[in-house]
Image (cartoon, rainbow, N blue to C red; front, side):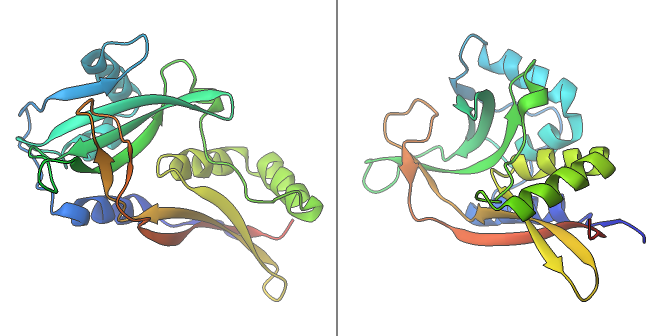
Length: 210
């Protein structure tokens, strides 16, 4: 049975991010300010390192943030690994100057910690689900690892959709889209959200049922 992968996922994510506040694509070579919490890294240098590892993805993300908007970066920890959130912030503060709004551009592994980056599997201590995930990872290691990274970039969770009739299992990524972030202290790091956005699920690939 053939394995199929949905190539529209990245395009979908970009369209969602760009559509949130109507971001325009910046011209090649145009610079945008970069601020935030970058741990032991200098923020512009950290962005350069990420671009070396993910050239197409970083270019797509940063192209959605044009002057006078600016990029905010935040290094944080999840599941014993650190990752980097990229956000795009409005130039002007909103709600009578109370806060600044922005949108997420994606998440990436901190340089040197790529092996531990990725989305989790939503099995919730279901032994059959965990067994199927393990079987898929063993049989299709490259494909499942790519899905973990792909979904992780959107801060999503991977879930299995089983069809006994077709004897197939779909891997879907569930993530929140259309989220508006809030920065109250102008440090380029999100302090919360204005609304929870919309829950989106996207099928990344289909495999024979293990």
